[in-house]
Length: 111
Image (tube, rainbow, N blue to C red; front, side, top):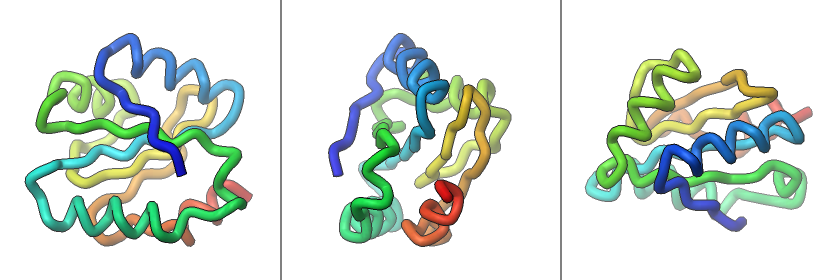
């Protein structure tokens, strides 16, 4: 699994454009939250070949709160942390937070 870092609004725009080519995942991570670390580690540990077609984007929301707020507004989701969103053609088709974030559920969305 390779994370693509979102650290600017133009990076978010690039991710959104990519969603028109294939599904993308955005993981909003709080670097000070133990649950966020657990969710991130579970994603990394359970990532497999079935998920490699999807680009994985990472946002440090503590450092880039304005981008996190833009994500919530753009994709019409309630802000949570940690949070994962699956974006398809510019629309959020799935979101989960905290320990509800699992690779198994993400794989079901990709089928």
